[in-house]
Length: 253
Length: 253
DNA sequence: CGGCGGCTTGAAGGACGTCAAGATTAGTGG
DNA sequence: CCACTAATCTTGACGTCCTTCAAGCCGCCG
Image 1: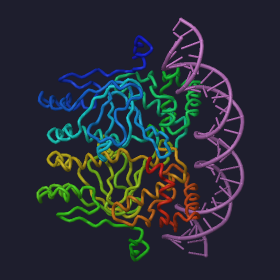
Image 2: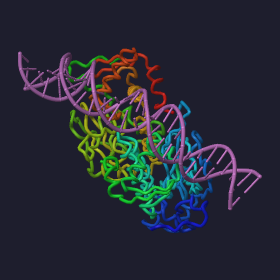
Image 3: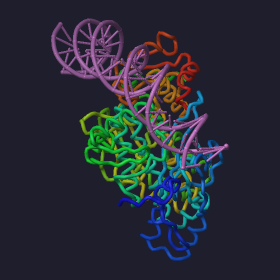
Image 4: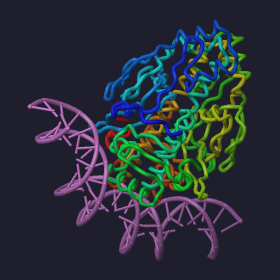
């Protein structure tokens, strides 16, 4: 599973890259791939779906895919790189809402208000698939399985707040964060024990509602305990089972 | 807006009651009412929709509408009373996920896993509308507006974790909690300044991830400050604007 | 009336945040 | 390739908010 380092310090920043789709196939990591592969839609249906999809990017670190209150018309799937969604509160302080890996959707929460309820920024070099939502909804009315897939995607998004929800200790939060990332990478076929944290400690801390100092301290404690190995932003889970045990009440109960 | 107390101590526990629908109308507070009223579906469509709906209840305080891992086949709308969703974590400790008022939907997060991801219990006497989801999805394929409404409902559920998400003080959390309840009651046509907390202090504390002692103390501080008046579980927001100001960074920034 | 659960109030302890300083890395231009 | 600067990260000391523990109070129901 250990992906060989890409040549050049720059390129290694890119992280895992999902394979691209073509005229007849979605990217293998894509949330919508299953709709076609599983139910055997014919070429016409495939083409109809592909007409909705537009590859956009690259977005370089710091560039935005969309911003708060931009009118909503498309949902995005991360094709490569890592994106961050966030808000700025009344006091001008950033609030990190989530990190988005290859194969994951962004913008589902924009459907109801018809505006993006947050900002989406690239943390490294990011490519998206852009799905026109109006077109997709129209198509869903004719493709029951696509509709089901959309319902599932949306429903899945509802339950996903657990990392922040509880009154958990810093260790539990960080353990859960690391294991959650590992699981999400694993689900997309990447190494579940070794990956790059594209976001800063500050972003992690902000997301977990901790101080960045606390993140540093806990990472050190984990490293001293032999649970993980940290080298800058590279992480290796050395005893994933124990880490998962620390996080068990978040991950969930 | 002050609803006269219903006769008898028991009945007053009931709280606001949404008006019932009939053959041709949904309950006025129902999330799906707008689909029909707004777009003028014909009688056949209305009948089709009404076939999906089943009135269930009463559930008395402590009775469950569904439990964790029950197979999913319906979403619920609260018709009257208040319901609570919760989980029991590894350590056997309860985790309150939310409180559900008349007109609000429960169970949307069960679509993806096809099982209810939590328990739903009545806090007082609760009546539900039960919508068969498979039938509803089928119908949605033929009724674009219903599909849109479902997408919106689901999307709306995604963003709704803010009360717990931030690193807020106990005062901010409780202020936000009170104002949020007021807004939700107001949206359904009930008094926005006077309502009953059907849940215990312990439930509130658990939901906000505080100790119940802290909830007591903050409520007292609010009362001493003249922001609210508390009498047991009855609450009156006396200076809603100031309360909203305390909660401004949650409600949202 | 008496018991029990929920609620309130007080005192002490702990986990995390804040403040501050130093170490490491990344980025830039010579 | 190296030097310089800025940003990020780490580590320590101290303060604070909330929890925990404990006791007393109130309302409800038998």
